[in-house]
Structures are given as C-alpha cells and as structure tokens.
Image (tube, helix red, strand yellow):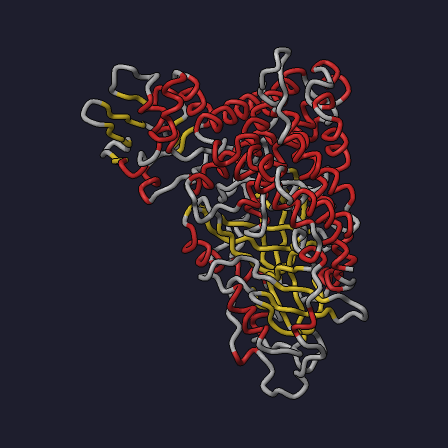
Length: 638
C-alpha cells in the first residue's frame, strides 16, 4: 500500500502511518451514535500531537489516561485492527482510537507486482502518463447515464436484479450487490456535500469501497477512494484541493457504481487489479522525450517516451518516493532495463534494441531477468518512424484519439508563435486554415522549467518551432508540450546544440538566448495576440451548469435547493436555451426540482427525500455537461 500524505491536514500529519480503508471503516462503525457526532471535532488536532517512538510506533495522547498507539506492519501501513490500540476503558470502541485512525492518511491497496519485476514501485497509468494524467472522471458516458438518470430511481440499481446482471452483463451477483451498496453510499455522500461529509460519511464510503474490492470491482473502489480523499482535502482546506476535481471524482464514482449496479455494464467496467505485462518479443524503440513525474503523494521521477519502428508508443519510467528533488534528478539517472548502459537523457535522444521485452497494456516496458537491452543510435524528429507524428494536422490526430477513458497520446505539429496570453503561449499551426492553439505548461510547479521555457518562447513572436506534447482534452485547443525543436528548413527557428539531437525537453532542458534566432528580422508576428480570443468553452453558458454542480458538491443537496428558490434557475435556463443547450437546461431544472423536493408521508409529515433520486438527477446533469464540454473542446481543434 502506498501512503497518500496529501489527504491529511497539518504539518505533523506525516508522522501518522497510512491506514487501510477497512480498518478505519470498522472503527467508525463500532462507535455509538453519540460518539459519532463528536468524531469530526475529535479528529482535529490529532495529527499535530503525534509522536513517533523508537520502535517505529506512533502515539497520540488524549488527556492523562488515554494514549492511542499505532503499530504499522512491515509495509508501513496499519492493515489490522489490533495494530491500533487505545489505553482507555472503552477501547477498542472508543472515540480516541477512531479519531486517530480518521486523522491518518488512507492507504491505496497494493497491486501485485508484474511477472517480470522492475525497479519502479509505482503502479497504474499515472506513472507512465506523467503529471498531466488526471485520474478522474470519464466524460463520456452521457447517453446511457443520462437516460437512466432522467428515468429516476426505477432505472437505478434496483431496476436490474442481481441475477439478471450476472447473466446479461457478465458480472456476478456479489459484484452487483457490492456496486449497489457503493452507489447508495456515494449518493448519501453527494447529498451531504463537503460541509456535512465528515468522518462518518467517509467511513460509509470506505466500507462500501472495501466490499467492492472484495467483490472484484477495483475501478469502483479506486473512484470511491478518490472521493474520500477529495472530501478530506476540502474539509481541511488543503491548498491542493480543487472543487472541480472532486466534482469529477463524484461523477466517475456515481457513473461506475450506478452502471455496475444497474446490470447494464459488462465485466470490463469492473476494472483490473493486476497490471499484466505480456511478452513483447524483440523490439527496437527510439526516444522521443523525457517528462518529469511529480505526484501529490510524495513520488517523483521521470518517464521517457519511446516509439517503436511500427509506430507503437512505449515508455520507460523511474518513479520512487522523493518528491521534487527526485523528479529533477531522475532525468539523468541510469535506465535500469535489461542491462542497458545509458541514462534517461541519453535514451530520450537515442534508442534501444530490447530482447525478451515485457509490455504493459499502457505500453510501459518492464524489467526482469529475461529482458536484455542494447543501446542503439537515435533518430531526429521527422525521420524514420517519428515522421508519422508530424505528418498530419493536430485536429486529425485529436479526432483519432479515444473519446473517453484512456489518457490522450502524444501528438506533434509545427507552429508559429503568436504571443503570450497569461501563462499560455498562443501559436498557429503551419497548416492552412488551422485554428489558434494554446501551449500550457505540462506541469505548473515553479521548480520545474516548463513554465520558464514557455515564457522564453512567448517572447519571440514569429518564431516557428516543432512541438511534441499531449492535448488537454478538458480545455479548448490546448496542447501541453513536453519537448520542442526546430522546424527542418525554417530560417527563423530554434538553434539547439548538436548533442540535443534537434529537441529540448521542456521539463529538464532550459532554453537560453543562444537557442533563439539572433536577429529580429523575419520574426514579426502575422497576427496580434489579443486577436486570439475565441474560446467556445469559456464563452458558452455551460459554466452556469458547472457552478450549480460544484455548489452541490460543496454544500450538498441543501445548497442546490437554496439555488432553486432564487432567480438563478430562470436565468440559467434562459441563457442555456438561447445558446442552444436545451437538454442542459432541462437537466439543470430537473436537478434543482429534485433537490428542493420535500415529500410527505401518509400523515402529511415531512419525510426524508431520496438521496438516490437526487444522485441520479445530479449525475444526469454532470454527464451531459461533460459530454457537451468534450464536444466543444473537440470542435475547437478543427
């Protein structure tokens, strides 16, 4: 299990070991109703009072008579209930023990090692994809989800029976039941929002997530853990917290759990725990660029992107605990792959011949006893197999990428610099009729040179350069460049040292004045930067729907209901319909109406409104918004 320190608050929180989700859920479940009401207040300040003993245990004192001691296992994680003890008379069903566990980071389940073990302990697509990878919501399942959401709870988890789902969707009855329980817990958490989503709500989600893991639903479990960490960060007012990210995490969780529980999903939606490596035979790959990897959980390193002779994309990564310092130093670290004697800087501009290769589904090359690698010479951009990366317009490359789920791949294009717009560089592709593009830093950390290199480029309007990067499919016509180089045959382009082999890795190499054309002649921009303005995503009224959804995540159902009683719903609907977003207007109206619904029982008394009906309405609006925004982003590239 890996430790997620970003989910805790306070400088002392790093002393507390990570806790398995099921251990925390069990501790909260054992509390009485009276103690549960005090749990959130008891959690505050626990981490700051933690003290580490010589034997590796961590203690937190409550008054004179109660000390909670955490004794993590060899992995550094509290995985068993008896590894958390309290000295008070009510232990183990005491408030002190539950509070300390609630203040500890939540651990991720450790994935099994690949068949050919390599040096990289980080698993999952984030390590290979780099810092631009955003785990989170899939934007697309709008059609199915919206139809079910509008239909209401009858189309929800109860609609398809467990046995029917097991037969028609390829899921077992236990998986359907686990998904239904997770859906219910997620719906309650959404109705509560950040303001009321304290430790008890989070524990219910963790309990349901653990059940989902046992049932073989790792994707749903991972989505639930992201929501819990987002709730914690928001309640702690962490600087790393982003309401938009938490909104996306809720959308992913509700979509995944709801579709699994409804019986409409196949076994593929369950996800896979093991990242399997398969035999790749003999490969010859060429380096494209290096990318720093820096995560909020304290990991840092590098991912070097490679291209095979058949055009297939591969990567070799070296990501370990160490944070920023390791991310900066790993760019020149040795490549531990089959005995190859070269570093990542050399691999990014060179190549490898690999015998007995093992390859993950994401294209990540594994290391092991049977792998042998020999360094070979590299190729310049535009030569050999790399020519295909720059042979078609960026709009065509983006249109060919998967519509959802998978991380967008790399694309290359030749552009002319227009100027700066904030922290973006405005460029125009050297293709007739091409739209204006925005180059944004692949990683915003000020200690990494991405932003500084882009500022230097922005200071040379009219410069033409070759760009290799990853499109940001959440923003209009935005490319996050990983490396740049000169355009072959262009007079006013970059002038890089010969040893750089015609490319500069923006996360490691720093562009200097000598790398740019010396004279100003020919560097006159063909258009002014302020004229670059049209952003179909920012100019559309869909921001009103986004604000409504985020208000529901922050303040819960009550916040959406309050918004329904003012003049905002009418203004929202009118603006959406004028812009042609009639479906968005209807779904937003259905959401506010459901949030403000106050049912009564047979005696006329107010009854609790269904959290599941509200969750379906929220999910319908969220799925439609994601699909609409994705369509606008796709259109911005054309």
